[in-house]
Length: 148
Length: 148
DNA sequence: ACTTTATGGTCAGATAGGCTGACGATGTTG
DNA sequence: CAACATCGTCAGCCTATCTGACCATAAAGT
Image 1 (spheres, rainbow over the protein chains, first blue to last red):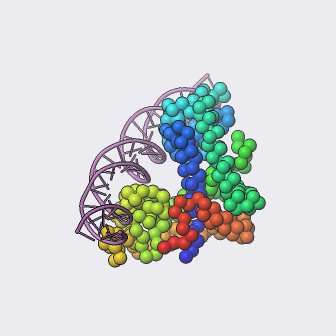
Image 2 (cartoon, rainbow over the protein chains, first blue to last red):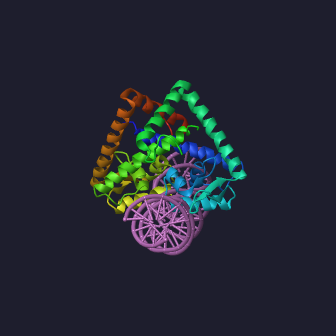
Image 3 (spheres, rainbow over the protein chains, first blue to last red):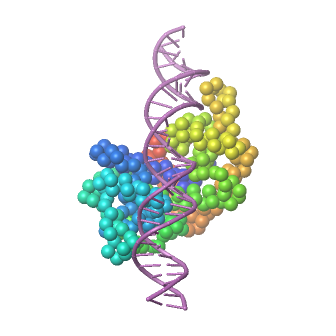
């Protein structure tokens, strides 16, 4: 039988990571977070991000992003502050609670990265990361080479 | 700045492929297909698949899979036939129309595979596929090494 | 200055896609 | 043949997502 398309395999592994992170957070008591919220929260920059940026990064409409940020705000993970450089815009920033969750999530991600590295071998794992980054150049509609 | 976790990069590339396939199908007049339906249809075996199998492969509940198969059936892409070996079960099979769509989808997938291969180099692309397949062993909850 | 056009965000409404739980029918096992 | 497992459906619910319309502010053109 034909091997599945690489994209399908990516789907499987990506899903696995999302699940692991989410389940870890639930265990730690952050049991109100959903995958969709997580996808938004994971893309928050250190100094806050605009809604439109988040929407693009997570590949959803700004309405959807707004809806999810509402929830995250109500749950106390983020807050909206006025953007000093543009009166139309607002910056979505992590609260302390939000930062705590992000740390937890990063912990799981690192653990999985180690597992993958062990499974493939460190060198091949490095190659995998490099190739995925290169692929992004031709698959990410918002790719610019470097972030703002 | 830190490089994103490989899983995030996988998300981007996987999404890209889904989008490309879907848009191609829409252009070809199959404009009633959705991503979720596609995820189910893409996992249909040559001789039909049971609902439960489909659900597992697409990582959704059997209820959800049933809901999507209903739609595919109404649109004429698949049909349900009794499973000769088990009166409880039914086999979801592609119709001729469904097979035509699958061919279109495969065409796009092959095109993208060629693009990736060109971008990374044939040898590295092969390595990528190998590594993704290996990763599956530790990330796919339904992995068994070989299909039924 | 003053239009015009672009951008950031929200509101309203619709729908798809996903879940849990319960259930009927058939298979399987002791 | 009784007990338990599996296949699929029904019913009800909720979240995530979209499109379209809209307001406020900013930027660009004249």
